[in-house]
Image 1 (cartoon, protein in one colour):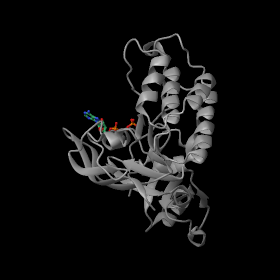
Image 2 (tube, helix red, strand yellow):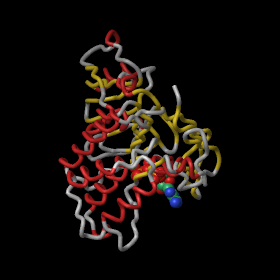
Image 3 (cartoon, rainbow, N blue to C red):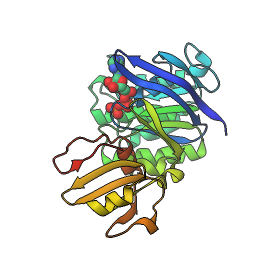
Image 4 (cartoon, helix red, strand yellow):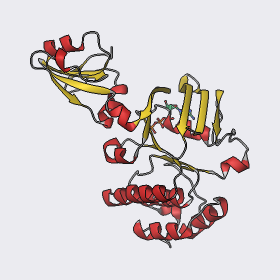
Length: 297
Ligand SMILES: Nc1ncnc2c1ncn2[C@@H]1O[C@H](COP(=O)(O)OP(=O)(O)OP(=O)(O)O)[C@@H](O)[C@H]1O
Protein backbone atom coordinates (compact mmCIF):
# COMPACT_ATOMS: atom_id res chain seq x y z
CA UNK A 1 0.00 0.00 0.00
CA UNK A 2 1.30 3.43 -0.85
CA UNK A 3 0.39 6.46 1.15
CA UNK A 4 -0.43 9.90 -0.18
CA UNK A 5 -0.06 11.63 3.17
CA UNK A 6 2.25 10.64 6.01
CA UNK A 7 2.09 12.48 9.32
CA UNK A 8 4.64 11.75 12.03
CA UNK A 9 4.16 13.13 15.53
CA UNK A 10 2.24 16.01 13.99
CA UNK A 11 1.36 18.58 16.64
CA UNK A 12 -0.19 22.06 16.44
CA UNK A 13 -0.60 24.05 19.60
CA UNK A 14 -2.52 27.33 19.91
CA UNK A 15 -1.90 28.77 23.38
CA UNK A 16 -3.39 26.24 25.78
CA UNK A 17 -5.13 24.24 23.02
CA UNK A 18 -3.50 21.23 21.43
CA UNK A 19 -5.43 21.37 18.15
CA UNK A 20 -3.45 18.35 16.93
CA UNK A 21 -1.55 16.23 19.41
CA UNK A 22 1.21 13.88 18.24
CA UNK A 23 -0.66 12.52 15.24
CA UNK A 24 1.03 9.71 13.35
CA UNK A 25 -1.10 8.72 10.42
CA UNK A 26 -0.93 7.38 6.86
CA UNK A 27 -3.63 8.36 4.38
CA UNK A 28 -3.92 5.69 1.69
CA UNK A 29 -3.33 6.74 -1.90
CA UNK A 30 -6.25 6.63 -4.35
CA UNK A 31 -8.77 6.10 -1.61
CA UNK A 32 -11.65 8.16 -0.24
CA UNK A 33 -10.99 8.64 3.46
CA UNK A 34 -13.39 10.25 5.89
CA UNK A 35 -11.77 12.44 8.53
CA UNK A 36 -14.35 12.38 11.30
CA UNK A 37 -14.73 13.64 14.83
CA UNK A 38 -16.59 16.15 16.96
CA UNK A 39 -16.32 19.93 16.65
CA UNK A 40 -12.82 21.04 17.53
CA UNK A 41 -11.36 17.52 17.11
CA UNK A 42 -8.59 18.82 14.81
CA UNK A 43 -9.88 17.95 11.31
CA UNK A 44 -9.39 21.39 9.73
CA UNK A 45 -6.04 21.72 11.49
CA UNK A 46 -4.83 18.45 9.97
CA UNK A 47 -5.92 19.52 6.48
CA UNK A 48 -4.37 22.97 6.89
CA UNK A 49 -1.03 21.44 7.87
CA UNK A 50 -1.10 18.88 5.04
CA UNK A 51 -1.75 21.66 2.52
CA UNK A 52 0.89 23.99 4.00
CA UNK A 53 -1.71 26.61 4.93
CA UNK A 54 -0.45 26.29 8.50
CA UNK A 55 2.82 25.17 10.08
CA UNK A 56 3.15 22.48 12.75
CA UNK A 57 4.43 23.22 16.24
CA UNK A 58 6.33 19.94 15.98
CA UNK A 59 6.33 16.79 13.89
CA UNK A 60 6.17 16.45 10.12
CA UNK A 61 3.69 15.87 7.35
CA UNK A 62 4.63 14.78 3.85
CA UNK A 63 2.32 14.68 0.86
CA UNK A 64 3.18 12.65 -2.24
CA UNK A 65 6.60 12.05 -0.73
CA UNK A 66 7.61 15.64 0.11
CA UNK A 67 6.86 18.28 2.69
CA UNK A 68 4.41 20.62 0.95
CA UNK A 69 5.57 23.93 2.48
CA UNK A 70 6.93 26.22 -0.29
CA UNK A 71 7.12 23.21 -2.58
CA UNK A 72 5.34 24.32 -5.75
CA UNK A 73 5.48 20.91 -7.46
CA UNK A 74 3.60 19.35 -4.54
CA UNK A 75 1.23 22.27 -3.95
CA UNK A 76 -0.11 22.16 -7.52
CA UNK A 77 -1.09 18.53 -6.90
CA UNK A 78 -3.25 19.54 -3.92
CA UNK A 79 -6.69 21.06 -3.79
CA UNK A 80 -8.12 22.16 -0.43
CA UNK A 81 -11.79 23.10 -0.38
CA UNK A 82 -12.67 24.65 2.96
CA UNK A 83 -15.91 26.14 4.19
CA UNK A 84 -14.63 29.70 4.67
CA UNK A 85 -12.85 30.09 1.34
CA UNK A 86 -12.43 33.78 0.45
CA UNK A 87 -12.44 35.18 -3.08
CA UNK A 88 -11.37 38.65 -4.28
CA UNK A 89 -14.17 41.23 -3.96
CA UNK A 90 -14.87 41.55 -7.69
CA UNK A 91 -14.67 37.82 -8.51
CA UNK A 92 -17.54 36.27 -10.44
CA UNK A 93 -17.91 32.62 -11.37
CA UNK A 94 -15.89 33.06 -14.55
CA UNK A 95 -12.92 34.51 -12.64
CA UNK A 96 -12.91 31.69 -10.08
CA UNK A 97 -12.99 29.08 -12.86
CA UNK A 98 -10.27 30.85 -14.85
CA UNK A 99 -7.95 31.02 -11.84
CA UNK A 100 -8.53 27.32 -11.12
CA UNK A 101 -7.88 26.38 -14.76
CA UNK A 102 -4.51 28.14 -14.60
CA UNK A 103 -3.53 26.67 -11.25
CA UNK A 104 -4.55 23.00 -11.55
CA UNK A 105 -2.67 20.99 -14.18
CA UNK A 106 -5.46 18.36 -14.46
CA UNK A 107 -8.33 20.86 -14.65
CA UNK A 108 -11.36 19.52 -16.57
CA UNK A 109 -13.40 22.38 -18.00
CA UNK A 110 -16.18 20.11 -19.33
CA UNK A 111 -16.74 18.70 -15.84
CA UNK A 112 -16.74 22.23 -14.39
CA UNK A 113 -19.36 23.33 -16.96
CA UNK A 114 -21.53 20.30 -16.20
CA UNK A 115 -21.40 20.98 -12.47
CA UNK A 116 -22.07 24.71 -12.78
CA UNK A 117 -25.26 23.79 -14.63
CA UNK A 118 -26.18 21.02 -12.16
CA UNK A 119 -25.77 23.28 -9.12
CA UNK A 120 -27.35 26.29 -10.88
CA UNK A 121 -24.45 28.56 -9.92
CA UNK A 122 -25.18 32.16 -10.99
CA UNK A 123 -22.82 33.70 -13.54
CA UNK A 124 -23.64 37.38 -13.05
CA UNK A 125 -23.50 37.65 -9.25
CA UNK A 126 -20.17 38.39 -7.56
CA UNK A 127 -19.04 35.36 -5.55
CA UNK A 128 -19.02 37.47 -2.37
CA UNK A 129 -22.81 37.79 -2.67
CA UNK A 130 -23.43 34.08 -3.25
CA UNK A 131 -25.73 32.29 -0.82
CA UNK A 132 -24.09 29.83 1.60
CA UNK A 133 -25.14 26.89 -0.57
CA UNK A 134 -23.94 28.55 -3.80
CA UNK A 135 -20.54 29.20 -2.21
CA UNK A 136 -20.33 25.53 -1.20
CA UNK A 137 -21.40 24.47 -4.69
CA UNK A 138 -18.61 26.58 -6.21
CA UNK A 139 -16.11 24.90 -3.87
CA UNK A 140 -17.35 21.50 -4.98
CA UNK A 141 -17.00 22.45 -8.66
CA UNK A 142 -13.40 23.57 -8.05
CA UNK A 143 -12.60 20.52 -5.93
CA UNK A 144 -13.93 17.99 -8.42
CA UNK A 145 -12.89 19.67 -11.70
CA UNK A 146 -9.36 20.26 -10.36
CA UNK A 147 -8.87 16.46 -10.48
CA UNK A 148 -6.05 17.15 -8.04
CA UNK A 149 -4.23 13.92 -7.09
CA UNK A 150 -4.84 14.81 -3.44
CA UNK A 151 -8.11 16.63 -2.80
CA UNK A 152 -9.24 17.83 0.63
CA UNK A 153 -12.91 18.62 1.23
CA UNK A 154 -13.52 20.21 4.64
CA UNK A 155 -17.28 19.99 5.27
CA UNK A 156 -17.98 20.94 1.67
CA UNK A 157 -21.78 20.73 1.87
CA UNK A 158 -22.66 23.59 4.28
CA UNK A 159 -25.88 25.24 3.13
CA UNK A 160 -26.39 22.80 0.23
CA UNK A 161 -29.93 21.52 -0.19
CA UNK A 162 -30.59 17.76 -0.17
CA UNK A 163 -30.80 17.56 -3.98
CA UNK A 164 -27.48 19.33 -4.43
CA UNK A 165 -25.81 17.17 -1.78
CA UNK A 166 -26.98 14.05 -3.54
CA UNK A 167 -25.62 15.40 -6.87
CA UNK A 168 -22.30 16.02 -5.13
CA UNK A 169 -22.08 12.45 -3.80
CA UNK A 170 -23.05 10.93 -7.16
CA UNK A 171 -20.61 13.01 -9.23
CA UNK A 172 -17.83 12.50 -6.69
CA UNK A 173 -18.21 8.72 -6.94
CA UNK A 174 -18.58 8.72 -10.73
CA UNK A 175 -15.53 10.92 -11.27
CA UNK A 176 -13.45 9.09 -8.67
CA UNK A 177 -14.16 5.78 -10.39
CA UNK A 178 -12.99 7.20 -13.71
CA UNK A 179 -10.07 9.15 -12.26
CA UNK A 180 -8.97 7.52 -9.01
CA UNK A 181 -7.26 9.93 -6.66
CA UNK A 182 -6.77 10.54 -2.98
CA UNK A 183 -9.70 12.29 -1.36
CA UNK A 184 -9.74 13.28 2.30
CA UNK A 185 -13.14 14.48 3.35
CA UNK A 186 -14.36 15.81 6.69
CA UNK A 187 -18.03 15.59 7.45
CA UNK A 188 -20.59 15.55 10.23
CA UNK A 189 -23.24 14.07 7.87
CA UNK A 190 -21.87 10.59 8.39
CA UNK A 191 -25.02 8.56 7.78
CA UNK A 192 -25.53 10.44 4.54
CA UNK A 193 -21.96 10.08 3.31
CA UNK A 194 -20.75 6.77 4.67
CA UNK A 195 -21.38 5.01 1.34
CA UNK A 196 -18.66 7.21 -0.18
CA UNK A 197 -15.99 6.28 2.32
CA UNK A 198 -13.49 3.45 2.02
CA UNK A 199 -11.42 4.35 5.05
CA UNK A 200 -12.12 6.35 8.15
CA UNK A 201 -9.89 8.27 10.54
CA UNK A 202 -11.57 9.43 13.74
CA UNK A 203 -9.98 12.28 15.67
CA UNK A 204 -10.87 13.24 19.20
CA UNK A 205 -9.22 16.16 21.01
CA UNK A 206 -6.44 16.29 18.45
CA UNK A 207 -5.60 12.59 18.63
CA UNK A 208 -6.31 9.66 16.34
CA UNK A 209 -8.73 7.28 18.05
CA UNK A 210 -9.53 5.11 15.03
CA UNK A 211 -7.93 4.56 11.63
CA UNK A 212 -9.41 1.67 9.69
CA UNK A 213 -11.22 0.39 6.62
CA UNK A 214 -14.90 1.23 6.85
CA UNK A 215 -15.87 -2.45 6.68
CA UNK A 216 -13.48 -3.28 9.49
CA UNK A 217 -14.84 -0.39 11.53
CA UNK A 218 -18.44 -1.50 11.19
CA UNK A 219 -17.56 -4.49 13.35
CA UNK A 220 -15.35 -2.48 15.73
CA UNK A 221 -18.10 -1.88 18.25
CA UNK A 222 -21.64 -2.90 19.14
CA UNK A 223 -24.47 -1.69 21.29
CA UNK A 224 -26.05 -3.40 24.30
CA UNK A 225 -29.41 -2.17 25.57
CA UNK A 226 -31.76 -3.32 28.28
CA UNK A 227 -32.32 -3.00 32.01
CA UNK A 228 -29.50 -1.08 33.67
CA UNK A 229 -28.36 -3.96 35.89
CA UNK A 230 -28.26 -6.50 33.08
CA UNK A 231 -26.41 -4.07 30.78
CA UNK A 232 -23.92 -3.27 33.55
CA UNK A 233 -23.27 -6.99 34.04
CA UNK A 234 -22.69 -7.46 30.30
CA UNK A 235 -20.40 -4.41 30.15
CA UNK A 236 -18.27 -5.55 33.08
CA UNK A 237 -14.66 -6.01 31.96
CA UNK A 238 -15.32 -4.67 28.44
CA UNK A 239 -14.22 -1.34 26.95
CA UNK A 240 -17.24 0.94 27.10
CA UNK A 241 -17.12 3.86 24.66
CA UNK A 242 -20.34 5.53 25.70
CA UNK A 243 -23.05 4.94 28.25
CA UNK A 244 -26.56 6.40 28.37
CA UNK A 245 -29.13 5.83 31.07
CA UNK A 246 -32.78 6.66 31.22
CA UNK A 247 -34.48 5.55 34.43
CA UNK A 248 -33.95 1.82 34.81
CA UNK A 249 -32.85 1.37 31.18
CA UNK A 250 -29.34 1.66 29.84
CA UNK A 251 -27.59 1.63 26.47
CA UNK A 252 -23.85 1.19 26.09
CA UNK A 253 -21.57 1.16 23.07
CA UNK A 254 -18.81 -1.38 23.59
CA UNK A 255 -15.61 -1.94 21.65
CA UNK A 256 -15.34 -5.28 19.87
CA UNK A 257 -17.81 -7.80 18.51
CA UNK A 258 -21.02 -8.77 20.33
CA UNK A 259 -20.71 -11.68 22.75
CA UNK A 260 -24.16 -13.24 22.55
CA UNK A 261 -23.33 -16.00 25.00
CA UNK A 262 -22.67 -13.40 27.70
CA UNK A 263 -25.83 -11.37 27.14
CA UNK A 264 -28.09 -12.47 29.97
CA UNK A 265 -31.54 -11.20 30.97
CA UNK A 266 -33.15 -8.67 28.65
CA UNK A 267 -29.90 -7.40 27.11
CA UNK A 268 -30.25 -6.86 23.38
CA UNK A 269 -27.13 -6.61 21.23
CA UNK A 270 -27.12 -4.74 17.94
CA UNK A 271 -24.70 -3.23 15.48
CA UNK A 272 -23.87 0.50 15.50
CA UNK A 273 -23.77 2.78 12.49
CA UNK A 274 -20.61 4.69 11.62
CA UNK A 275 -22.31 7.85 12.91
CA UNK A 276 -23.07 6.19 16.26
CA UNK A 277 -19.52 4.91 16.47
CA UNK A 278 -18.05 8.39 15.87
CA UNK A 279 -20.43 9.83 18.47
CA UNK A 280 -19.35 7.13 20.93
CA UNK A 281 -15.65 7.91 20.43
CA UNK A 282 -16.39 11.59 21.08
CA UNK A 283 -18.46 10.84 24.19
CA UNK A 284 -17.33 12.50 27.37
CA UNK A 285 -20.28 12.25 29.72
CA UNK A 286 -22.14 15.18 31.20
CA UNK A 287 -25.87 15.61 31.61
CA UNK A 288 -28.38 15.86 28.84
CA UNK A 289 -32.03 16.75 29.32
CA UNK A 290 -33.13 13.31 28.10
CA UNK A 291 -30.78 10.98 29.89
CA UNK A 292 -28.28 10.52 32.63
CA UNK A 293 -24.86 9.81 31.17
CA UNK A 294 -21.88 8.37 32.87
CA UNK A 295 -18.29 9.18 32.10
CA UNK A 296 -16.51 7.00 29.51
CA UNK A 297 -14.75 4.15 31.29
N1 LIG B 1 -5.98 29.88 15.04
C1 LIG B 1 -6.40 29.28 16.15
N2 LIG B 1 -6.24 29.86 17.36
C2 LIG B 1 -6.66 29.25 18.48
N3 LIG B 1 -7.26 28.02 18.51
C3 LIG B 1 -7.43 27.41 17.35
C4 LIG B 1 -7.01 27.98 16.10
N4 LIG B 1 -7.32 27.12 15.10
C5 LIG B 1 -7.89 26.05 15.69
N5 LIG B 1 -7.97 26.22 17.03
C6 LIG B 1 -8.52 25.27 18.00
O1 LIG B 1 -7.99 24.00 17.69
C7 LIG B 1 -8.98 22.99 17.88
C8 LIG B 1 -9.14 22.19 16.59
O2 LIG B 1 -9.79 23.01 15.65
P1 LIG B 1 -10.20 22.49 14.21
O3 LIG B 1 -10.76 23.66 13.45
O4 LIG B 1 -9.06 21.76 13.63
O5 LIG B 1 -11.36 21.44 14.56
P2 LIG B 1 -12.38 20.66 13.59
O6 LIG B 1 -12.27 19.22 13.94
O7 LIG B 1 -12.14 21.06 12.18
O8 LIG B 1 -13.78 21.22 14.10
P3 LIG B 1 -15.20 21.45 13.35
O9 LIG B 1 -15.83 20.11 13.16
O10 LIG B 1 -15.95 22.29 14.37
O11 LIG B 1 -14.92 22.21 12.08
C9 LIG B 1 -10.23 23.69 18.35
O12 LIG B 1 -10.29 23.62 19.76
C10 LIG B 1 -10.02 25.12 17.90
O13 LIG B 1 -10.69 26.01 18.73
